Image (cartoon, rainbow, N blue to C red):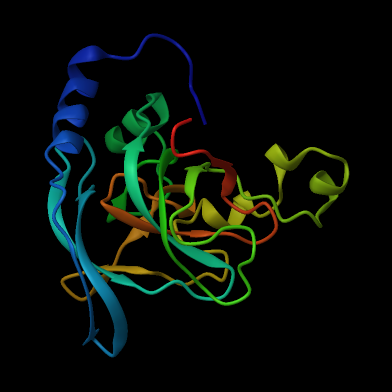
Length: 201
């Protein structure tokens, strides 16, 4: 997704400012929002219109389902791809969406059938899933995994959503949307939690 060339500094500064405005305030709780079970409210930087600043807003985050993990974000990468999405050069995922396709954080909760990680583990989030079963994964080329075509649409691997804002589904860039206090990501096989790292690493 990297387009190459110098990053327009004026544009990315604005994007950085929006990301830095996300506060570290969230409270774990359960409630029903629009018929969907929500485990917490958090804040995220949401893109609602191309070539406009991101809007920091409160989101409802649904609990992780089978082979999914809830992660508290500690850091998010910012590259030319995020800028290109914000400017409408890359129009995937659809709007509204939470940009950010790489980052690091701490596992808070795991869904059913997750055995690779546990709450408290420090993990890196990557934008390419790795199913371990498709043609590319079987050829030891997980970075080309066919499931990336699903996450490009801004949904989870099952085609559904975990984030809502004001009752509306929110897409997440490459199935992760790391410009958020918390995010739910795939953890099937290699999934999108590619590495577990030591807390001091």
